[in-house]
Amino acid sequence: MLRHTFAFALLPLALLTLVSTDAGACCSQRTFVASTGNDANPCTVVAPCRSFAAALGQTESHGEIIVLDSAGYGPVTIPNPISITAPPGIYAGITVVSGDGITVVTGSSSKVVLRGLTINGEGGQNGINFVSGQGLQIHDCVVSDMAANGIQLEAPGSTVLVTGTLVRQSLQSGIYLQGTQVAVLDGVRAEGNRYGVYARSGPSVTIRNSVVVNSFSGGGFNLEASSADSTMTISNSVSSSNSGHGVAATESGGFSARLTADRLLVQGNAGVGIFVFGDPTMVAILTGNIITHNDVGINIQHLAKAYTRGDNTVVDNSSSDLTGASLTLLTAL
Image 1 (cartoon, rainbow, N blue to C red):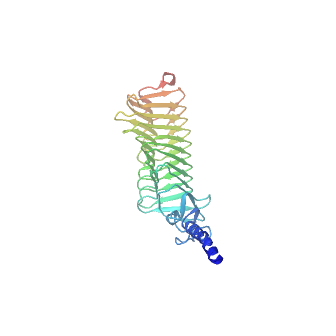
Image 2: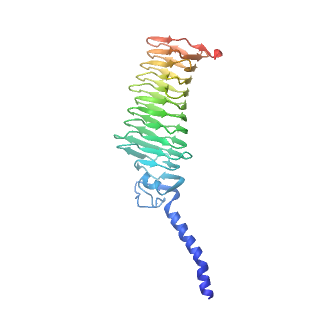
Image 3: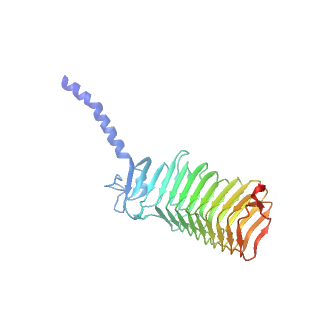
């Protein structure tokens, strides 16, 4: 009788152990991928997976996928809050033949972090496509040769941080923002895209310590308010050798745009260095900028208003240094 009682007493413990083992086999807080991995593995450090997609299925929400060595790890769609990290010195590639390289479609309270990834387009549309979610951080990544945008940011109500990232040779924009979001771009380089950075209809974007060069058919930094109010603040940055305008801000349809450009070097652009167009609600604040060797230095059109401290250096532009409306001192604002 005592023997039977002891056996039944052990049964709950055995069931608890079974449940715990099964749960642990499903997902881990930290998973790994490697060039020698296998997607049938549990994605541990000693038995890594081969692709980001397989590792994602083995990673808990708010967990992390870590790259162990240099290889290509394939496109991935991210539905949960997660981080994907390639340490310095490791090449973690994604080749995009069709569709998007990384698609983020998380919930409204979810955040995703991408670090140290290299995304190459071979017919694919967007390198990184942020469709939905609370937040996205992109650090130290390289995105090249996309048929649409290098990085496309359209998640409504989201926050975005992009640092130390190179976007180049996209057939549309290096970084494209649309909709109600707050974004910070710091230390970004956009090179050889159609447009460098393009913010349209709703975003509030802050750009600092960044460079846009050689946009092949459009401008460098672009702000457009056509279906929602939009804001762009650029500081300590460069827009150079673009086939369009160095910086352009436009509004239409009764929506307002606000551009602040502080301590920019805007040089060698085939269009206008800084172009501003819109109704009186289109406000530009231009302080401490060097604007030189463009076709036109500054062009303020329609009813737009532009303000300055009187400390811009506008010199040696081909056609004219200033056309359109004059700049007004900030004390009048």
